[in-house]
Image (cartoon, rainbow, N blue to C red):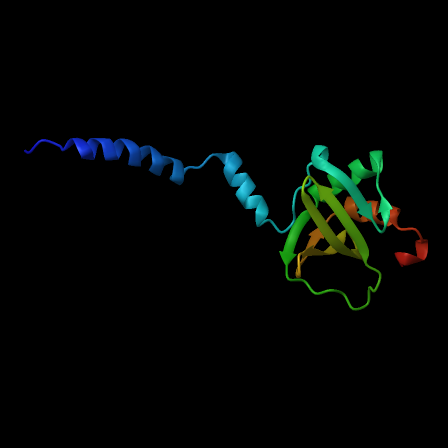
Length: 148
């Protein structure tokens, strides 16, 4: 059997660790990559500088309630239709670090919420289920007739 060339040993010493890194990247790197393509983002409370619901700035406890309710909302499906009967959208604007999230929410009742996420010129429509988020959004509305 012929001896193994030295260059093959050196090449494998470089290629094998590099291949192991590419096959199993660090979770921090993957979480950052996946969060860019996430439809329903998770909001991180310390990084959020402002939460605006229906033109009203949420502060303190209301802001924390909104963030917890938004993060705990169950994603149902993408590509829902915007309801024709509900012409009263709730506009939500969240600034987290350098990112700005803009949503339009339509309340269906029974904890069903239609969200339209505005990403540049593109809109992503999806539905979430959360009775707590629905109650938080209803409490932010100025007029009671708006919900009915």
